[in-house]
Image (cartoon, helix red, strand yellow):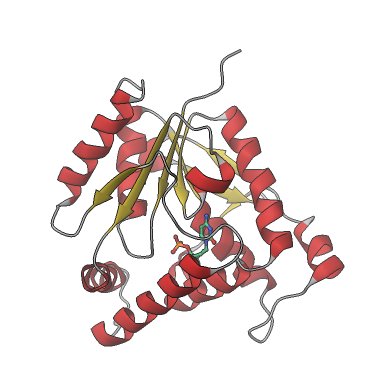
Length: 225
Ligand code: DC
């Protein structure tokens, strides 16, 4: 049996990955795997006073989590232990915790297995930091989105505002730069494009233009839609 189609979509915080991934999944008839949400869910569940369990304690804690996907396109739902994640995973604080959790080898190894198992069953847009490099290096279509930090901070500010949360632009910009630094320079699965990824700078593009470029790349890789 042939493997389900896989499209990987990587890029830094605030680049518009989630929006693009959902629109792409909808237009190509794929499910959407938001791997940042997996790190965020685990970070909120396992974080205690700003720290995480380590070693065997972490491995045992991780064994209590299972993930599943329901539906496709923008309506894809990620379930953790049978329940969809709540809005609380979308805060800046949860993002920063997720970034720190991503430094722990047991967590990366656990999620790698979970993500590969999902990719073996579902045709997917897999969205994250290391989808094209560490998790699905043989995916037929790999995209890497980037944008200037100032543009990403402004987008994040608008996104949070839509959720009723107000954040200062300068604070968001500082945190985006910090998160870039952490995500790009960590020793395990750092954020970088796979050698064969299509690079898309979204700084001066609107969401429709980004989507059109991504759909074109997917068609070239053999996915009609
Ligand atoms: O995409 P996001 O902002 O929801 O991700 C939150 C953090 O999770 C990100 O800063 C680093 C971590 N992460 C990761 O290490 N690997 C992934 N594939 C996805 C997210």
